[in-house]
Structures are given as C-alpha cells and as structure tokens.
Image 1 (cartoon, one colour):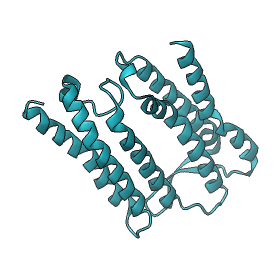
Image 2 (image 1 turned 90 degrees about the vertical axis):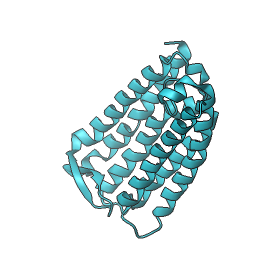
Image 3 (image 1 turned 30 degrees about the vertical axis):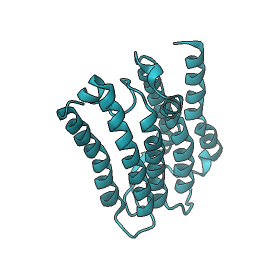
Image 4 (image 1 turned 30 degrees about the horizontal axis):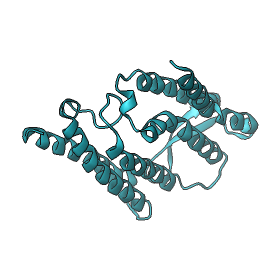
Length: 212
C-alpha cells in the first residue's frame, strides 16, 4: 500500500473512530441499553448494551473501512475509477459513522429526532451521489455494476452505467420524496432499491444479447 493510500486509510479510520470522543463525553448520561435499529414508524426494535453500542459500533465501522480500503487498493484496474468515485468509496463509511453515531447517542438521550425521515433521506442522498458518478466510472473490478458482460465489454459497461446513473439519481430523489409522504418507509424504499438493481442488470444483459 502506497504512502498516499496509507495516509487515506489512517484518516478514514480516525474518522470512523471520531464519534468515540462524543461517546466518552456523554457516557454517564446514556441509558444502559441503546437503540441501534428502528422500524419504519421510527420506533426502536433492537438494542445493544451501552458499552458495545458506543464503542463497538465505531470500531466495527473502522474494521469495515479497512476491508474497503484493501479491496479498492488491490483492484488491478483501480486507476480506471474516477477520482470522485474512489473518494466516495473510501470515505463513505467514516462519513456515515460521523452522522449515524451522534444521531444514535442523542436519540438514546431522548432527543426528538425523526429517524424515519433521517435514515431514508441519507439513503436517497447516497444513491443520488452514486448515480451522478456512475457514468464517469470506467471499467474496474471494485466499483460499479460488475456483471460478466459489463466486465467483458467496455461498450456494455459504458452504456449500462450511463443508463444506471440516470435511474439511480431518479430513484434517490424518489426515496427522499417518500420521507414527506405518510407511507411505510420500508415498503416504499425496498421496491425502489430492487428496481435500481434489477433494471440496469436486465438492460445490460439485453445489450449483451445484441452483441454489445
């Protein structure tokens, strides 16, 4: 791993662990059990002991971050990925850690935070950002829509990612819009995500059958 990659790994790992500072500051004010998952109505349905939630979750994020860096930096075609796409891939987990952990802690302390709105909005924003950069992602083995026919054909890869980019941006926008409607968020989001995965796959395969 090069010096630049090592520096990025260190910074992103510190980013993942940064919420621990807030956890230590608020530790005595937190309940013994902390909610770490909420249903579509915004009600907690899964808890962890305080110590595991406030220290274990950031450490888990740091471990996931390490795995992502290993995978991305060992891709033989990693230089094909647009710099912005690589940046998103390498920094997504620490950014989520810095957002999710404070929300979890303040929610545990009784703050009136609309989880059922915040979570889908974050998902929608991430999907829009990814969709924006999908068409700019060149053929590689780590990021993008990695199907046998997209990896076999540069033309198929380009057309699939251009199509998927528009679709993902529309899908992300639709997910954000669902947060303002009185809908079961899970039932609204899951079909959208399925469409975002299935339709580009079908489109790519249809291009393959046409010899692209």
